[in-house]
Image (cartoon, rainbow, N blue to C red):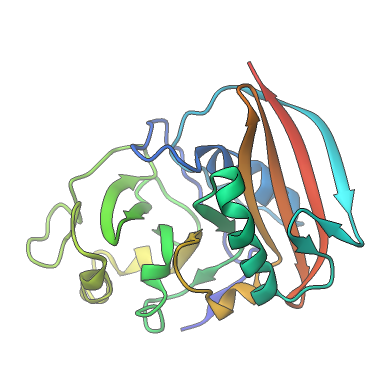
Length: 247
């Protein structure tokens, strides 16, 4: 299995339905914008299924030295992950989005899948039939196609090997492995994006290869911050805070 860079893959998700999970929706809403801002070559822009309020960017702060909240510029990614967890109870954070955490095939994902909240699978060039899995409390909570269609199981044509809402996360790897060997569906495993990290789960060392982590949180009823943690070779290089107001 090889890890895929952004220049080789960005998937298109044209979803327009609201996913049941609402916590972390602010951070997920800004996924297309934040990913696009990190790239020089963008084929398509992913979009998580959610419907937050319309928002406008008010201002931006950039930090390149010293501290911000629990974070210290120059810290390694493992330490930064601890800092995110130190902060999460203060701002009600459960998940953090990981940029460019993309793999080809499932061979090395058995231990990684339970660590994530959102997993997206598709061909290298995104399609409307890409598959979005939402995981919560160690089970499959949601299944969506990139078209916005909600599913009870995927693939719908399969029986025992299909992934179903309510499945325990422990069976996900074996099911994905079986589906990936099916000629009809193997193209959906060309790019597997471990998109959103569950902060209640242990650190994934592959996160140090990501150029950016980001999260959003509400300050007041109509104001929020989106925090982008930018890394260079696994070291926190800068922090960008975008301040938004919703209407």
